[in-house]
Length: 168
Image 1 (cartoon, rainbow, N blue to C red):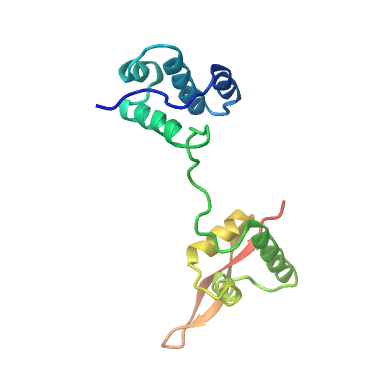
Image 2: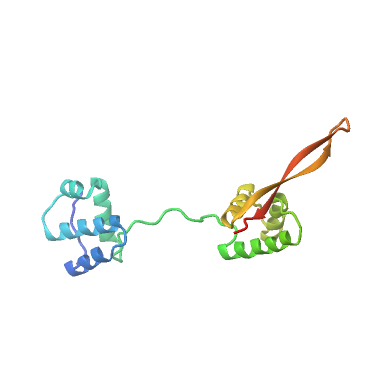
C-alpha cells in the first residue's frame, strides 16, 4: 500500500506563500492539500473529499513533490502551436508582403501561397495551414467569376476563390 507522507523538508511558511501566489485554482488546491497533509494526520480519502481530486491524483501529486528537486507541483499547460511552420512574427511579415501584393492589384490564391511557402521552408505545407494562416491574420475569402468553356464550347461561369485582407 502506498504511503501518503511528505518526505521533503518544506516549511509551512513556504507552503503558505505558494498558496498565496498560485494563479490557478488547481494550483491553490494542490498546495492546500500539501499544507493539510503537512499540518494534520489525514488520509487520501479525506483529501479527496475536500479537494475534489481522486485518490490516485493525490498520491501522484505528493509523489511528484517528493521526487522532484524543485517545489513545482503545478499542472503543465496544454495546447499551443506544437507543429508550427513559421513563428508568429514571421507569419505576420509574410502576410504583410502578401498584403502589399494584393494592394498592387494581384489576387492572392491559396495554391500560390502554398507553393511560395513550400519553396521558402523547403518542406510540404498543408492546405489547412494556409487557411489557418489567413484566418489568424485577419483575411477573408473573396470571389470573382471567370468565363470558362465546357467541352461543347458553351460559356459558363465558374467562381474562383481568392483571399483578401479584412478592411477595418
